[in-house]
Image (cartoon, rainbow, N blue to C red):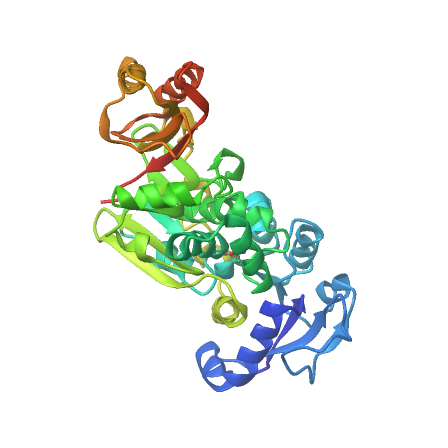
Length: 436
Ligand code: HSE
């Protein structure tokens, strides 16, 4: 059969990985796809740069629009990332009747609804397995393998850079800034690492996962986002003392009145499987009503793990190329007209437990004042630790674990605590989940 020609936008780490896998595993890939898949055209910002892949048979250009306009190309792999010009290129490729594969989580989370509609208009398809958790086939699992279930919740470590930083802070007692610089050197972090540490990258991925799990439109702007930039070594150590590890999680729950979509540092019981996912690894736990909890673990970034997902998408596209669009697996697992309009809940309506740390004057009655404020807002305390003051200090750290309460009550209680004369500075709040 005639080979399928692929045009690549971007020939960096992941792009080179794709070229290498297509070459090295050509026999098994062709036997699975039923046709040879070959890269014929690629754009790169600096085509003269040495690459970690062979370029024979690939026409190189600096202009990505040349690739999306190439009439010989059937599939475009968009691996340049970011919003623009990626969005424009993808839309043009779809208008040109080409199928698109992308690893671009920002693009799908923010513009996916528009892109899917354009693909449908043009009778072509968009695949994006590599956009979430790199090499872990989590989209395939949720979209195709768990479709008999109602998904109750999912929770994931979906930013490897944050997980690496928290792991190093925990095991080596290192400081945040040091470890981030190392993560950048090792190439885990995004070009702009603020997306890793402020939670945006994880929120992009959570948006996509939640839409597929619950059948809701992509709503990146409704996700509550908090990064790990305020987590200190002290909090990591106090959490451990209380029997918890701090992990940066993407969490999606189907609640009674809607969906809770949130990304934030979370205290997890130390024995929980997700609490033991270390370094740059990713893991996603999905709880279905029929299957129970399921766990997916693997490399969330890197050349070949991400390229593994891109190539799998290529094979899927080739296998389905002759299907009528309405017979293809729906992008968000549910048919477009059947997407749920149930709301994403504002954070103030979300219920969770809390770790609080505050610095209070070391004098009689302070603990009573603190617990009275919490009691006034109906917040029940599960554990409390008061540490010794450091030599010469007149303030002591007080650490509290609370039972579950609506965030709006905690907001009000924290505001009151911060106004207490005996309390110095801000109250640190980290949410606690048991994920049982
Ligand atoms: N910067 C991302 C991470 C890469 O650290 O997980 C994969 O999306």
